[in-house]
Structure formats: C-alpha cells, structure tokens
Length: 102
Image (cartoon, rainbow, N blue to C red):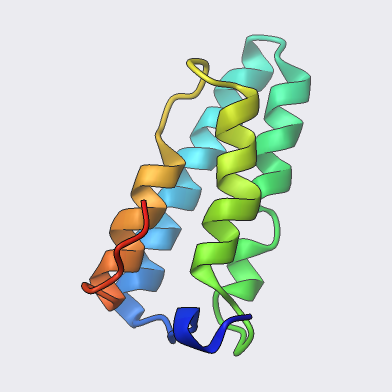
C-alpha cells in the first residue's frame, strides 16, 4: 500500500460503506431472482471481505474501489443497479478532499 494513498477511515465513511453494502445485498437478491447467478456471485465476491476489512489497519479504500468494484462494473457495464465506483469515490473524498483520482 502506498503511504501517500493510505488514510484511516472515519466512522462516517464506514457508515457510508455499510449503506453501499446494503445496496449490494439488495442487488444480489434481485440478481438471484432474475436468474443472473454469475453476476450475483461476482458482486458478492467484490464485497465479501469489506465488513471485516474496513476495520483493519491495512485496509485501502482506493484499492477496494480499483481492484474489486471497478472490475465488477467493467465486466457488467450497463447492467448494474448502483455505480459502486462513484459511491466509493465519494466516500474517499469524505476523508481526503484533496484526492484527485477518478
């Protein structure tokens, strides 16, 4: 993890991550009802470590966004209920308003 990319999550950021997970769970349920099991599994895979990792000292929200959420959204471009990458970026900006990445 890059030292200049590292920052600790605030409780407000964790609250927003919990809201994002709730949206993901609802989308997983909808995908299952629609028979889109591979997409549901991929979304679950993107989020499954977040509940414990967001409390860990090593957690990197930028990495979570870029490695898990971007990959999911690129694979299912135009077929996702929420823009998780944009939501993660908003959460990043809450703790690091000078962050200039997209």
